[in-house]
Amino acid sequence: MAESKLDYLTQEQVDQFRTDGYLRLPNFLEPDEVEALLLRSKQLLDNFSIEEHPLTKFTTGDDKHVGDEYFLTSGDKIRFFLEEDAIGPDGKLNREKQKAVNKIGHGLHEQDAVFRKVTLENEKMKAVVRDLKFHHDPVALQSMVICKQPHIGGEVPEHNDSTFLYTNPPSALGFWIPLEKCTPENGALSFLPGSHLTAPITKRFVRMPGGGTGFEHLVPPDEAPPNPQGKYILEACMPGDLVLIHGSVLHKSERNTSSHTRFAYTFHMIESPPHAEYDAKNWLQPTPETPFPHILDTPNPTVVPVGA
Image 1: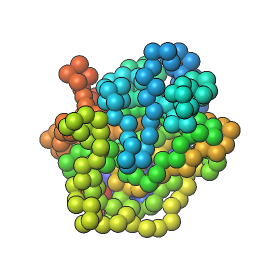
Image 2 (image 1 turned 180 degrees about the vertical axis):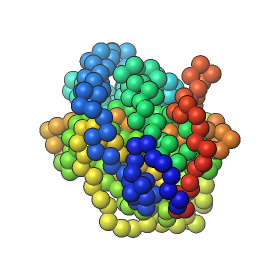
Image 3 (image 1 turned 90 degrees about the horizontal axis):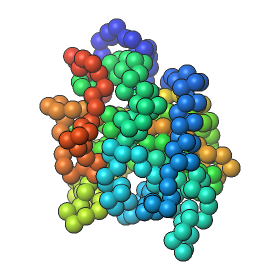
């Protein structure tokens, strides 16, 4: 790949992302930016009304993904999704609401000024996007604070993000910013390096015609190749790091077995038309009032395909 002028990343970092499918950038945010995001997250948890909440739980298994109206209409709102283990057999919370939420999402980047500043109004973020040359004209979607609550913060099994934010061709790119220290005990992310080059997108998460959500197979299940095998690398992170996550790279996180939360802010970008199609089957849909916001002031004139 021909080298060109870079604004934030080094060429070594760009090459590492293309080889591994992910890249950790230490100290991407300043401490005061991290503190502002963490404080705002806790304010949101304090202020939401559990009495008016439908008690929607966020689940990650292939056969039990969440798909109610509260979830499906959350793309341009700030909503709260509960841990499975936070609701008892009687259907009521078994702990205080601040310790029951799995994640806050999915329109933080547009609806909240603190998150918008870091996401859409951040010159360093725009520089990273330009340097990667991954997208021509990316748009942002699906922003979340993932709380990973003590003891009940659920395991997230092996997956790739383009399955859940599908475009044709696949173009999802994740931006993951820990707001607290991430350790093996509280559910730090693990990655299978290079799997983005060998793990095709074989299914996609969609709105089902009869309501709810499910998976549509792009390849017949009996013809789908098995996921690549290899050694997962755990990425312990510090507050303010930025982890870039290729939409095809396999990654996961374990259950939080510690007594500490693992707050992280994450959002995604996808390519915009005419370079990729994001269709009406996807679970998260833009609205006329809130189309997906563009990241760059001027589109990237060239994009370098991963693997080139």
